[in-house]
Image (cartoon, rainbow, N blue to C red):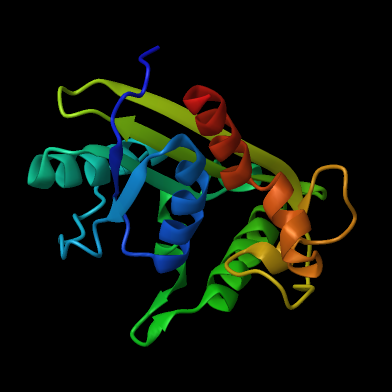
Amino acid sequence: MRKLTERKLLLATHNRGKLEEIRAMMAPHGIEVVSAGELGLPEPAETENSFIGNARIKALAAMQATGLLVLADDSGITVDGLDGAPGVYTADWAETPNGRDFMQAMTRTWRELDERGVPEPRTAQFRATLILLWPDGHEEIFEGVAPGHLVWPPRGEQGHGYDPIFVPEGHDVTYAEMPAEQKNAISHRARAFRQLEAFLA
């Protein structure tokens, strides 16, 4: 495993919230973080069928454009009764001509489970994959998985995406019924970030 000696990191995202999150994490390590959005870099097409594949596409595009050390991520939900779908297509299932509608995606997911006759508990996992890519092509990968099961109808007002129908393992409320601090402490992204922080330390 390679030591991190670089003092500047490019985050391959156009998401402001994600940028602030990573900036706060990197600050104690003396690492300056700039985002692809701030540099005006285009967002590459995500054409792989795995989370690591799509994270690598984003990382490579940003690294080739700047020559900097890059951190990229990809995430989504995998439903066991749907053979791992929607997986890397999680956001695609929510796409409409007027933007993303996750109620549409959640409804489709539950309907397809019904059509297949999948018994409850309908297990699923939120997954997050982070890739740290150096200009010489070396990479370190960090994966976080949050297991749980799906419920219907949707419950709770917090969170986003599939949060209203996902109950994490060991809990009896959905992500959307949890305070943000509680969800963020146990989420797939938090688990991946903890591995990244351990690597930095």
